[in-house]
Length: 195
Ligand SMILES: Cc1cc2nc3c(=O)[nH]c(=O)nc-3n(C[C@H](O)[C@H](O)[C@H](O)COP(=O)(O)O)c2cc1C
Image (cartoon, rainbow, N blue to C red; front, side, top):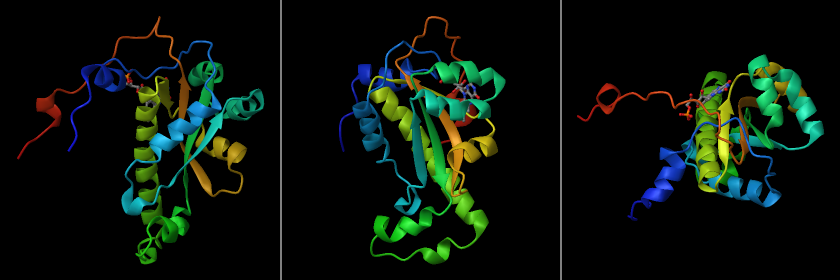
């Protein structure tokens, strides 16, 4: 048991954090990208399977590969972000289980395609959420988005078909000058039961 985070830290990660797609002209360093992964990798996943894989895009060449897959409304802001991350899931993530879950053989669990897909996408989405929280914790802003053509993105970045894109995150140090008001959230009474 540890103490709750100080109010200022909670505010940075939740209270004032926003989905942000507009950024200052300030690069994100390789060291920060590494820190992001070192934090996000600690996300819990079923059987500790860790199906998420990440491509961080910073170069012009990388952005040129990304651009055609983006929807019209997302293209400009995504290309302008200092850093983008593709969060994908490995459709053969279970091949790593002998190393990630030593001492337990769960291979019988991952035979059916539907089960592989649901475990892979569900757990990779959890990992993506942790990546967003990690970004906020290190002082970055993150703008998640699914407004892209996943098949086109996969052809551009994962041509052998093994990795499949789930989410693109725009990352950087946010510029919130023109950000819209935060959308309402469901009230406790409308979303929660305690039984
Ligand atoms: C899975 C997912 C998909 C999203 N897709 C888009 C998108 O395509 N374009 C966009 O501008 N924002 C996108 N968003 C951002 C949401 O609109 C935003 O997270 C939500 O309105 C909450 O905003 P807030 O975090 O600032 O309160 C997406 C967010 C998530 C989590």
